[in-house]
Image 1 (tube, rainbow, N blue to C red):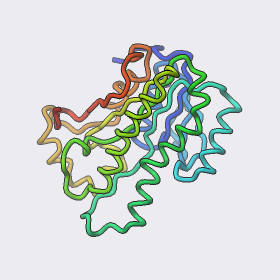
Image 2 (cartoon, rainbow, N blue to C red):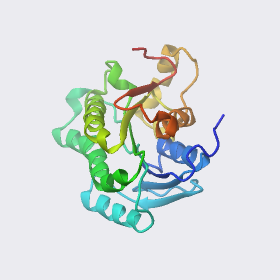
Image 3 (spheres, helix red, strand yellow):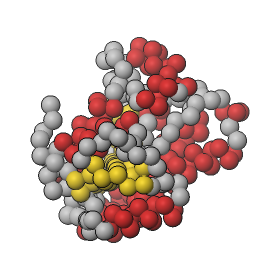
Length: 242
């Protein structure tokens, strides 16, 4: 059950808002009263209440343009949820260095680029929030996900250092590690073959949906999470415990 208007007056940015997880988070934040801006290279047709701004997080110039567009409508950013990313799966010997660099540019460097671009606006908030969407793959060794897991683990290290650095500014920084989630991209991609095995490993025996993640992420955006920072919240139906 959603706590209505918990985030009333909050200015939030969600990267990857046209994707399954980013879209669910954006919709949840809107439902809780936030004003939401979606950064993505694609435009989603089903995001009512979300102002969509074109942004390729792997391109610093695109990030700069998006941040300038945002400044035209708000001087403050209270919440930044970094959900842009992708999850290719294949054996380690099949990866080229260029492909790994491209994945790093999206999952890690792209996250940092957006944070840097919005940092002045986040500091203007009295309760800034940064939430990075990593993966439960970092908690377990999964064949076929070596470069992906490396980039997602890097996000956790980055978040903990950011939490220490930005804490004096009143900004919290946390990470959410979802399990395999039934986004359209996952259902249509190579990882679809893993759903049955993942569900079997879970304590709760059903597929994880993007809407299962959104309320937990919204909590980290809320006033109730004011003293939660540098933490990792795992949401995977009980596949991993730690």
